[in-house]
Length: 135
Image (cartoon, rainbow, N blue to C red):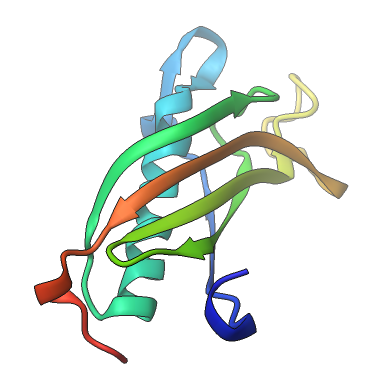
C-alpha cells in the first residue's frame, strides 16, 4: 500500500480487436498486455504526481492464459510502494468476456465468472523530483 494507506489504482477495460491479433488463430501478442500496463502506469503517475513519468523496468512478467481478438480485457494497476522518485507498481490483466466460443456462430461470447487471469506483472516507474506535483 502506498503512503498513508492511500491506494492509487487504475482500471482499464477494452475489447481486443482484429488489429491486436498478431499470430495465427487470432492470438493477441503478449506485448499488447504490457502496452496496456504502460497505460495504467501513466494514469497512476498522473494521479499521484501530476506527471506521466517514465516506466524503467519490469521485475516480473507472467503470461498465464491466451488472449484472442474479440476478448474483453480488464487491466488493473496499483502503486505498491512510493520512494523519493520511484514508484513500484503491480498489474493484472483479466479476461472478463471470452469471444468466439462457437466456431459456427462468430458472434457467440460468454461472461467469465470469475474472470480469468491472463497476465501478471510488477515494475518500477520514476518521476524526477522537478516534475512531481501534488494533485
